[in-house]
Amino acid sequence: MKDITAYLTFNGNCGEAMKFYAKCLGAELFIMPFSEAPGDFPKEAKDRIIHARLAKGATALMASDTMPGMPFQQGNNFSVALGCESLQDIERLFAAFSEKGKVTMPLQETFWAARFGMLTDQFGINWMFNFDKPKQQ
Image 1 (cartoon, helix red, strand yellow):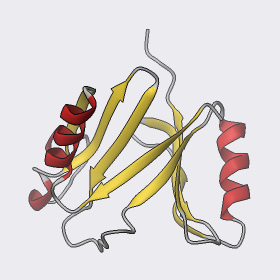
Image 2 (cartoon, helix red, strand yellow):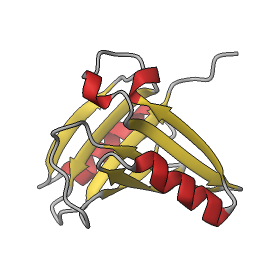
Image 3 (cartoon, one colour):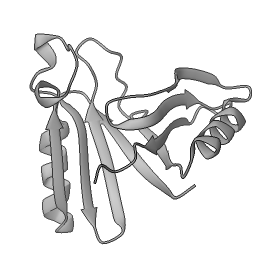
Image 4 (tube, rainbow, N blue to C red):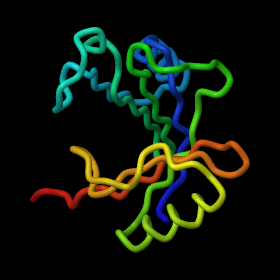
């Protein structure tokens, strides 16, 4: 495992919140709306944020909006994101954390990751697992 990051989920105000946090922390902010992401998303999602990351030094905070109509409960809207170092690492960690838990997104390739998956562990904590695609030279 290479890092652990808090991941916040918002209901349409991710951009506003992350701009506020970036200002408070003096951090750099990257925001990608659904309209700029590959894939077919509903028109209602175009102004929502598919991914935001603010960074200062080695510290990062990540976030996104829910898709329109997806369940959202304030206070339950966070995950712990694990950055993994290899396919073996992500598969081992995902299997270990999913014991007696509920997989909400099986490990799979995405446009940003070689493997990504999500689950809720047996204690009700939401986890995201990410193994980056190799950097293009």
